[in-house]
Length: 362
Image 1 (cartoon, rainbow, N blue to C red):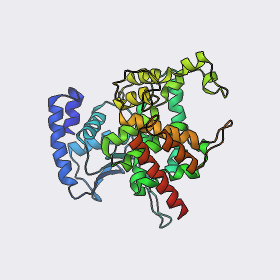
Image 2: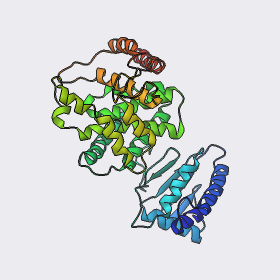
Image 3: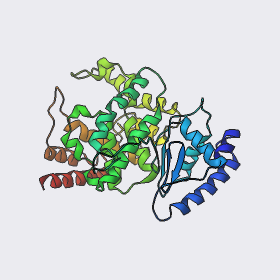
Image 4: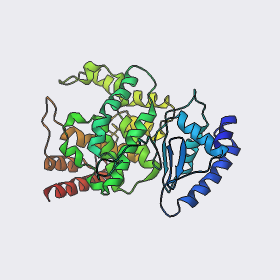
């Protein structure tokens, strides 16, 4: 709260704020040293910690007031929190009521609402939604985000970050990253948007490689936004079932550049999202687009996105093309490894597919 007070007076990067943030990090590390999360609940105007109300002080009263203004009644901070995450929380608490950003979760900080009611059954409460459930619930929100772009409005990145975080938390609950693709086999294609598919597939790849933390979040956000440039391409070109003519194809090839330029203008978008939007059609051998120098080095997230995109295109039934079965997809992707697709990352992805197929057979 001291850091937040200083941030309100000065700036989030002021040395006083950073000093208090460091002190708060040390306290949080002590409180969560045993691996348990720190949880605060606001119930009937009282702040509850370890199932006991905190003694009223000027500090707790101010925190209660800030929570109430932001409709927060639950704050959970997991062990392993990053300095940047805590600084973001401090920035949220420092903003005045009329000039604040949307509250959204991060990997180790979770907000929520508490509804006090009698329990009517012994079923578990507050369980995370499964991947399929999240995708179904968030489909409209994803489409809304892309509609903002289409209308040349500034996108709200917090909505994208919330969706990605929901997937990551569900992966953690599921306990087996290799099964993260399972919902894609069971849900009708129209339940998902293409961007949600690529997000899930990229996160599954990254989890299988042992990637965690902020990089995992950024990979998910980058996947969700990789095709944002298509919002600047005419729908007649995007929905055309016949082959594009030379002029139309030239227009279509502009969408990576247009997407990267747009994302550069959106506050708080990870740089990785800009890079991935620009690179995701380059191919491993650089024979794709945009054209770059032979010495160009692509980010591995762009490689993963190309792999996910290839798989999703083949597994999706379209009005003019039947979906392929898994064995056909594996064979084709194996043949594409080394030219269109990054070979090692493709083999990692195919391992996930084979293990998934083995699980389904069991």
